[in-house]
Image 1 (spheres, rainbow, N blue to C red):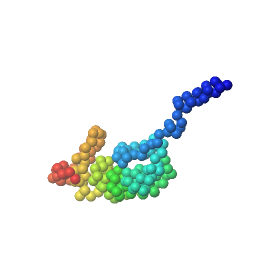
Image 2: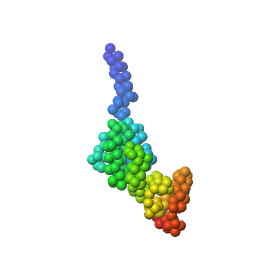
Image 3: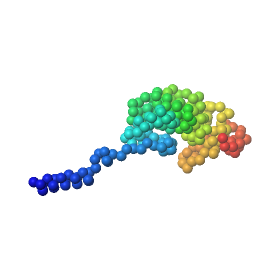
Image 4: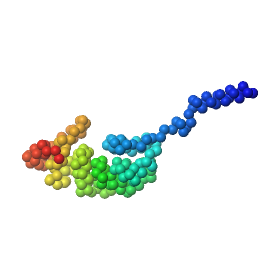
Length: 208
């Protein structure tokens, strides 16, 4: 009887040693650094990353958006609210946090709000507001904003006084994407048709 009890006890100990508990096997996800989050936002992977992390960071994200008021986390929290990622969908509140992020000058937030006003996502189209946000994002070197703004200008909208600045921004833009490079070239050619030659030459020399 004692031998049987010993063998059973030994088997249990071996099983515990081989199979760790759920608590031991669970690995908590670390909150993103600001630079990590900004990289995710630039690649438009921020929402998918939150889902991949099984929504474990919702409270941390909310705290950094609301209490710490970090623009990158305000943008992420706003996007999560607007699209209902890991939390209840609230478009109006989501746009509010995107606006807070834009007010702090985050280029991605400015570009996104400009795009939303341009295409009428979550709101009625407003070309004047779209241009306002896109100009601000373009000044912060958002290539997405610059290309969208060029499309708007080349469609006959916007002030001709703003054309040289955008031309300069696009002329000095750097990209290794061949399709984007080609699109920039086409935008520049169309913009150049709207300006005198000496203005175009100056825009090429001076980086705004």
